[in-house]
Length: 422
Image (cartoon, rainbow, N blue to C red):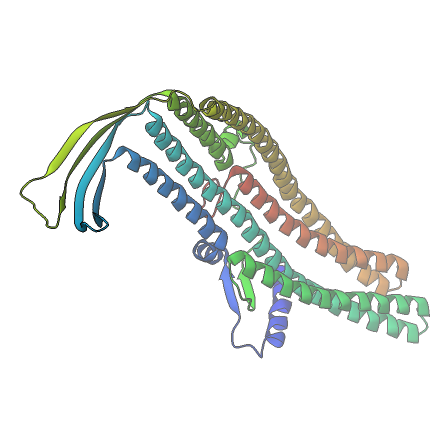
C-alpha cells in the first residue's frame, strides 16, 4: 500500500511541477545541518552568549592595573601684565589591592552567567529541533496524504462506474448512485485540500529551516522512530540533566555571588597609585620629572542606606531563583512524564491502527466480491468501503503523530540539533 501511495504522489509531483526547473529533496540530516547554519534564533542565542562573555571580561578588567596618559596646555595671565603658557603631562597608574572580594565575586557571578547563556543556547536549539521535526513530519505526511487521496478518489471513481452500470441494469436504485457520486465529490475535494496542505507544509518547513524564501521542497524519510526503548527511564535524572534546570541552577550560584558582592560594599577599598609627569611654562624639559606613589584607602561610612538595600535586594533575588528552580523542576518532571506517556501511547496506537487497516483491506476485498455477486446490499458494502478509507487515513495520522510525540519526548529531555539526549 505504501509503495502505491508513493507512486501516485510521484505522478502528481511530475504533472504539477513540470514547469519548475527543479524540486529540492531533503533528508532529515540535511535539514538539521542547514538549520544549524541558518536559523536566526540560534544566532540570537549565540549573540547573547557573546554578550555575557564580554561582561565577564569587563569585570575581570577591574583587577588589572589602570594606566592613563594626560597632556594639557593653557594660557594664564593678568590684564595689562602679560600672559604665560603652562604645559603639563602626566602618566598615572592605579592598581586595586583589596575590595572585600567584591570584584572577585562579580567575576564569579559573570562566569555563571556565561554558563547560563550556554544552557540558553541549548534550550533554543531544543525548541528549534522540535519545530523542525514537526514541520518535517507534517510535510512527510502531506506528501503521503496527496497520494492517499488520489488513490481514494480513483477508487471512488471506479465505484461510481460500478454503481452506474448496476443502476442502468436495474440492479441498484438512484439513491445508491447519488451516494456514490457524493463520495466521489468528497474524495475530489480532499485531493484539492491535500494539495493545498502540501504547499502549506512546504512553507512551514522552509520557515523552520530559517529560510526567508520558499521553494518547492520534497522530504525523504519514513515513519520510523529512532528511540526503540520501551523501558521507562529515570525521569528525575533526566529533569536534572535538562539544560533548563541547569540554567536555573547556575542562576542560583550567580545570585549567591551577587549577594556576597553586595555585602562587600561595606568593606574598605585599597588601591596602589602612582604618577609621573611635569608641569612647566614655555618649554618641555625632560631632564627632571615629578613623581609620586602611595596607597589610597576608601572606607564607606554612610550611603543613605543604599548598601543595606542592595544586600536586601540581592538576598530577595536569591530567594526568587531558589523558588524558580523548584518550580522549574516540577514542571520539567511533569512534562517528561506526560511526553513519555504520549510517546508510548502514540507508538502503540500505530500497531493498533495497522491491525485495523489490515482488517479493513481484508473486509473490503471480500465485500467487493460479495457485492458484485449480489450477496450483500449496497448499504453494507458502502459502510465497509468507508471503513477502509477511514482506516487508511487513521493509520497515516497515527504514524505522523508518533513522530511528533517522539519529537516532544526528545525536547522534554533537552535534545537539540546537536543530537544530545536523543
